Length: 169
Image (cartoon, rainbow, N blue to C red; front, side, top):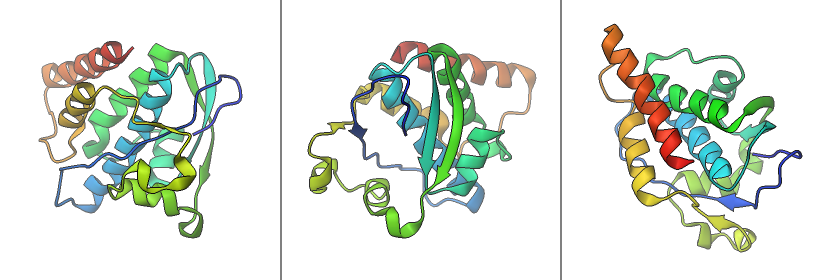
């Protein structure tokens, strides 16, 4: 994740998802959740009022952040993503796909390896998100949860997503 308009210290994170086993739609949602966590880290470190370029290894997640989601399973994560953009005054610029050969560190982090196991990340901040906030986020965005079908349920999701972001800020 990068943005030349706002100085954010370099960061890396490793988060274990406990959502398994996942269908392909739920797996794509977990890729969007990774984007949300990365954006939340940058916002927590001070990213505001900027255009953000995203780099990732999931073509699906990158397409979703550039346009919109195409899976109901990703709705909760997408609502948090949109709330982060709005509350921090951010817009998405370009998205860049990272091929497998170039993706060793991010892939390792996504599989639960510690930031400290990568010497190249020695100067990076490790997971700037408060653990209790991260736990609340993961409970909320779990792609295996039932999909809401009524207007009050959808409103509750929107309100919860916005509340999560405001608590972070």
